[in-house]
Image (cartoon, rainbow, N blue to C red; front, side, top):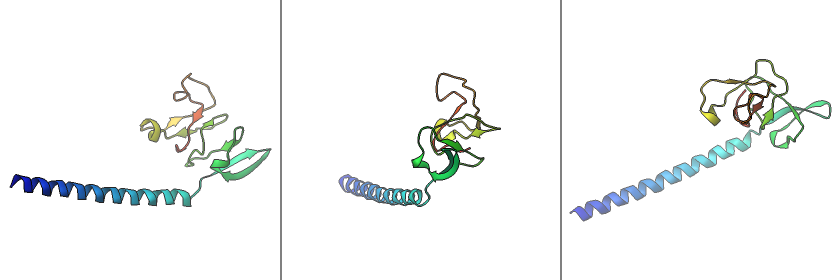
Length: 122
């Protein structure tokens, strides 16, 4: 009697696990397709003119123009700002937006106020 119950419970657990794995893999593929459908663009100053390029085409030395609501297209060093804040909650869990400016304030890159990191929101 207990053997039968054990076999039934094992079967239910295996079927549930397979079903969960299938659902998770489908949703992951859907999310990847969404990310590929909407490529991220950045407005940058390159060779003296402002151009709109894909974020993956940014190179060292490009000056990126970030506005309120933009997603940061790459790890950037802030060289000029006016009331610039970033939402680092996806990286650090901090609930409040952190102010950023051109001042170098700390040795640790995660603590200094002159860096903004990829995929955080301005």
